[in-house]
Image (cartoon, rainbow, N blue to C red):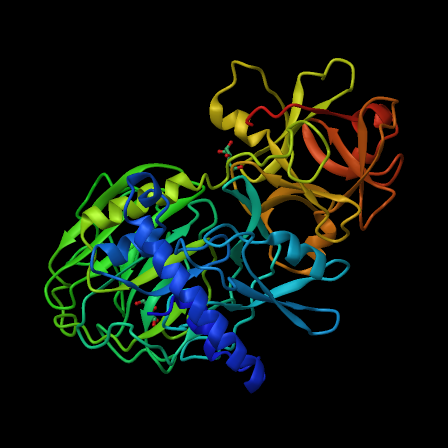
Length: 529
Ligand code: AHR
Ligand code: AHR
């Protein structure tokens, strides 16, 4: 048996025939060594702990038939590409792979390839031997052709490394309509994705999973995808979401009746969330979810198929969709870090082992860059230096940037709101951007000269509005942050609210009185590391 990544390269047409022959010999040799190593791997429990989600599902008899991630390998032996980026400047593309076999994404390769320009993700590779690669989705029954996600919109930490998630802003999606091994016509399957509970909306349909092969709504039961968002399709729902739901076509189901029968399922707000769906294709489906940073999975529903025509048996068509509905309904937003689909319906025990592996990744944990400095990867807080206001820190509150008294006695969510991860400038790598500590992929940006926390949408305007260039503090203390696209205006607090303000100008917040103090910030240790 030839391991998946090697098999892929073997089949790759990128290599001329003669070098392919040479590679064949090398690969056969490597395959032998890998299989031998695999035999050793299963021999000791400590090495078994290194198993990734697809190793765990394979061991449980429900192997992955799709494995997509921009952050890490989903097989311990995988050493191929994770995704492909395309440069805006010259249209050239580059595959982004791993730092080590079975490890984490080589984000530095993306950063250097995309220096001085911007990149979008054009392919999300399937790590399974099935080659079910996802490419940018074309037009469908409910939406025009999509675009790829900006490659740098969702920097996160995984395994202590800075990697990128995929941040969908609407009208973005990926698909594969000609797959191999994906369930069709009532075959059993399972799937999960690691997504985010802080980047969601109530539009249709942030999905990952089985969909129609023609981008059209072809009827009940023709989809079987995990959905994550705040769209309550069948009222009543409990709470305000976001929920993990089953998109089985013509409905986002929380039960066989559609609506929620589980009052405790009010939504999953975790910055990193696991959402899982499995379906035996005939008379049973289950939805489970959890916090991808810690803890186990909760079964939110496990029971009969929807009690409407068309769902028992299911009629899956076997395409794979990511980020839209089956008919390319593409109004939804969402985040994607990793996901797999299995052949056969996994056991809860296998799911639980996968969740344990997911939480071991440490998504969103502090990076290895020391905190409290203006270095990309460092987590900081920004304290006012204006006399009388030096206990105030830049935070977001109801999506607006304010400066607010923060102390060691402040509540944990308030501390997290007042903590920011320093990133390379989204518009200019020689400047900086500030990502929210508790809303991954959301950045501090100005708009109409007010300042907000908003999800990065990939637009040139957002990039510019979210980029600040550090200068020596105008009052001789700390740092002043010049707006990249309004360089005469600096990040300022005025009347407890954040603005970009000039030293004298037409807006009240441009007043010269205490301008130098108000635009000077002490960079401190973060309230939330
Ligand atoms: O089932 C919900 C959505 O309804 C599907 O994703 C889409 O195909 C249809 O519009
Ligand atoms: O900024 C969004 C949220 O609004 C913050 O987390 C919270 O402080 C407020 O409710």
